Image (tube, rainbow, N blue to C red; front, side, top):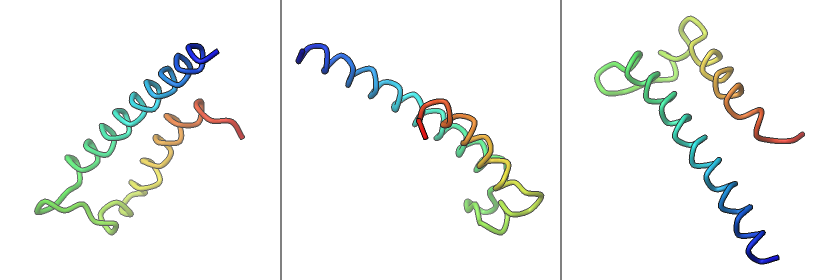
Length: 68
């Protein structure tokens, strides 16, 4: 029973690590595309609905991995 639980926990940890990597990549892309003088501001992200688009992408990444 203990080994089974450890295996399940390891699998969950790997999924979370992969999601974290994907999330960081998405944020890095946004930062690279829209930062000015080394800063990414809320004002810049609100232009052209960039923040909403990024949130939709995050939702697409995360939604399959949680239950409601």
